[in-house]
Image: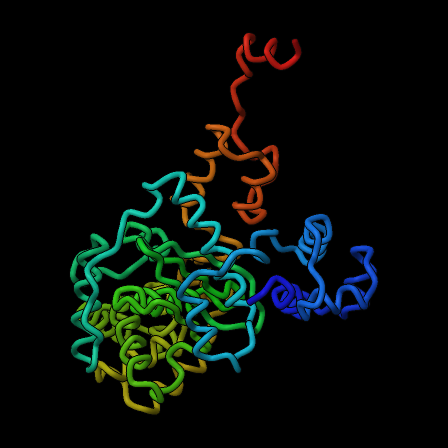
Length: 365
């Protein structure tokens, strides 16, 4: 896209008319219209003002986006830019900048996995992934977002309202995933597990609008199965489900509430997993899908509440790398705060050592 086309896209995403943006940045509406169509060049001062008003960095308007996203847009020009797409592009730029300065940010990625074509292949990929993440064969995944950076995938969670569930961009080394933080925690974790599947089979760019909803797309269905198998290992569920159901005074609902808390998944995911392992019939699965965990359940059953991927959340290695750049004075405080997406304020940044006396005299003399 040209600079003008990018101005038009960013303006539309911000919900502004040409007249509104022109007034905000101090140019005539006709001048802005010519900028957007390419009939008039935009000055550096004007571009800075436009970028500030549209809350974009200047480089977004003048540099090509990540290759994977550019390729996707070129192949599907009829698809409008969505919030997920824009956030992925912004974060890929940020991660690329930080990784260039701190190469240890991204530790690499595993060899490309075979695309699972059957449920059994999806289960095998989940078992291999659990091993890569340092988990025991039948150990549930408690903090997936803390584990996946070890194999090069950096997960971010942002509030995206009714946007896509998740999206992933494969980098030259590693990958970036954005999770819609407005989903419930179980769905957020399922979305990340699903995106991890895309990452492992090296899909360059994906945006998923639904996870575990239908079997319309064969690959998506297998990655849904991979995600469930990863989060809810079969042997562990078979053993615990019998225990929960046979406990004195416990009902099907009680067992479902305990299982959802233990595996940190939503009820739809739990019901689907129980069904595919032949642990419930259709009627029981439908009943489980209707279960909602109440505060009374948490108190009476002494359950833990979970907040994984609550927005805004950033991968810890990324946070550490940004702070490292700030400590070394490679970036300013404003740049650090921008890279940290508002999760820090100026007082939260580390204290920098005072400048050496000789350096001070060199500046003021």
